[in-house]
Length: 354
Image (cartoon, rainbow, N blue to C red):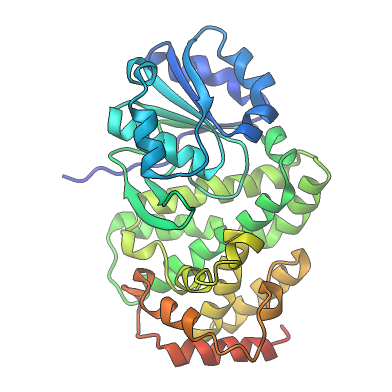
């Protein structure tokens, strides 16, 4: 027996009005976990929407999505007695809440305060060590029950998260199609691969306008569509495809690049991944798509060359390339990708003009 899930969500400036319809079925006692900045930006909407619920615990989730933090929260008596957990924040906050819910067998609901990743709907959590370094991917028994998205909160968050989210989201389609290229896929993976087009086409078509609107704090149809690409479409792919198809070279190169400890301090996840997408398209000779993504990146100022990631063309990058090639994201790809292939493609991209 296999069970599959797709994201359940409510979106709109009145999205939290649906708390009653969706969450009350699970009970009235709520444990509220949030990111400090996210809650400050959303509490004037979130708290009134919880007026008919009993908040038995509320607190900042912590500083890191680590086991130490998760274990600390899992031991809180008030959380263990809650009927449900409501997480308000970005990826780390939501991932912590999801794992706490998984360990305590509590249903988890999410409020996505930024549009940067699909964490608010997925069945995995990206966990780190207490120092912020990557630890592992935790696989949950169930995804969040429902995600609530108020685009007004998203457009008033720092625009850089939306910007990076677009870069990360386009990679989902490019990697999914690439990693499944030579396989006879089952219905679910074919379904997810089809959904992945919604991670790509709407951003190329509407992303530039949506990003300008976010920078101007305007909720537009383009903004809502790109939010759904970033959170819902990407999450839908993650939930339903064979896990082998969820990543490929774009993310492997991200993990390679972040062996330089300063990389994540200066650049966002999706920003770095968007560069890896260009490398993957070029290494696979997908020149038409490379031109589209390259031109889009140029328009919105996502990376197109090493300089955009504070690297030099003459950097040997052996540490980066070694870490890239051994990364598990390359365990299932249609042909072998070697260290020298990646190096040559990176240098070739330096000469590419779109």
